[in-house]
Length: 164
Length: 216
Image (cartoon, rainbow over all chains, first blue to last red; front, side, top):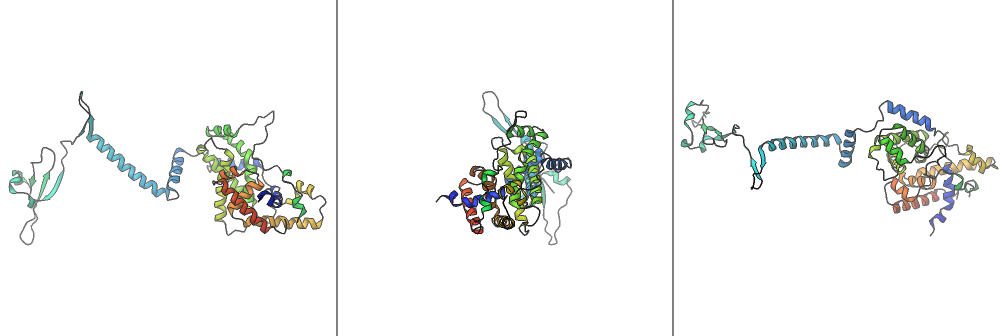
C-alpha cells in the first residue's frame, strides 16, 4: 500500500498550514529582546561550574541535585582527608638492589590510649607508677570496686601500662 | 472535497527547506559550523547570525505545535537562550539546526504538558489570517462569500484536528508535512528511530484523515 498516494489529498490540505505562519516573525526585534535579556543577566554562557552541575544533573537523572552534591562533597572530603593522612604515614622506598618497600610509619610521639577494665590486668602487669597516680576508682554500693586502667598502646611503650 | 485546499500545491510555498538562505555574491554564506565555533570562542555576533538564520523557521515550528503566537515567541526566545547558554556542549560533528530544533521541541513538549488544561485553539483570534495572505488570495481569486466561509471552516477544522493529535504526533506532522524535513532529520530532533518517525507519521495521517474526512 502506497502511503504517500493514500495521504496525498491530506498532504495537500496540510500544505495550507505552510501559509499559516505567525505574523510577528520580526527577527531584529527578536534579537533586541534577546540582547536585553542577556544584559539583564538572564542569559549568559555557562561557567565551568554550571556545566559541571549540568553534567552531574544528567548523571543523576532528575534526582535532587543539591542533596546529591552534598553527599558527593561529603564523600570527597572524607576521601581527601583519608588520603592525606595515609600518605603521611605510608612511604614507598627503594634501595639499590632491593625491591620496593612499603613502610607504615607510626610516629613515636603519638600515644593512643584505651580504657580497659582493670580486672583483666594482673597486678604484676601494672607498674609502680600507679602509686603516683590519682586514685579515681569508683566505689560501688556493694563494696566492690570497678577498676580501669589507662593503657599506653604506643609502639615500644606498651609495657608502660598505668593503672589507677 | 474542498477545491480551495487542493488547488494549493506544496510547491507554492518554499518554507520546507532547512538549507540556509542562498549566499549572495556580495555576502558569502558562512557555514553554521564556523558561526558556532566563533560563538564558542566568545563572539556573540556570530550567534546573532544563527538567530537570524533559524528564528523564522523555528518560530513556525513552535507556532504549529502550540497554535499560539505569544507562546511560540516565548518558546523561541527560551530555545535560543538555552542554546546560547549550552553552546559549549554542542558537538561540531552534528548539525546545528537539528540540535536547536531538539531544544525547541523538548521545551515545547514540556510546555504543552504543563498547560494541558489550557485551550490553545484560537480560531477566531488574530493569529490566523490565512485568507489575507497574498499566496492564498492568488489561489482563491475567484472566491465568493461561500468559498470564504468554507475556507474559514476548513482552517478551523484543520487546526482543531492538529491540536487533537498528541504532541509527538503533531511534531512529526509539523516537521514533515509543514516544514518539509526528512525522516532522518526528524528522528534526530525528536531523538527516536526513523521507523518510529514513519509509524508516528502514518498514525497521525490516519487520525487526520479521519478528522478531516469531509474535506478530503
